[in-house]
Length: 187
Image (cartoon, rainbow, N blue to C red):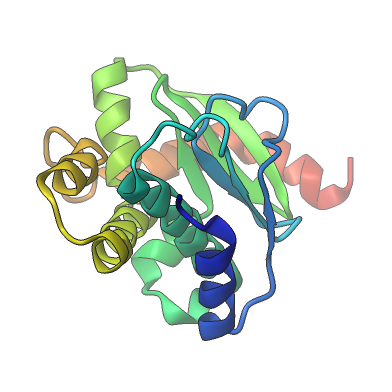
């Protein structure tokens, strides 16, 4: 049985970060395998959803979320592409968010799900978290065809052309600009 707590504690100690681990998913995330909430400094793992998953899947999702924690809490350890992209969330359906003053501002961009799926999976911070999760799960469980397949599943099906994220982020900036001004003014 995969020991989430053991690997969680080891990671936090090795990286000098203080986090909480919760197996109670927040509202609206009940179908997610995991998530990281920076404001609460909490890694959420949906252990009930992953109960029948393999050990390498459990390790993969834990280390994916732990990497997001490091990306947010220790940005100096990451490059500008990860730091700049981590303010944005692009969802599969074109719903997008921009983090402003600790609050996510929402907007919607038109396009098909396949396109947005590739954008979501290719975001620099997601690609980094997936690569890290694969590396760590390999160390714990050994490399396998199943683990490589899991990693590949979380990669874009088509390459995201250079400059795409800059364009999408500019679009999100434009669509959230009015709400961003209000948030800055405390309205």
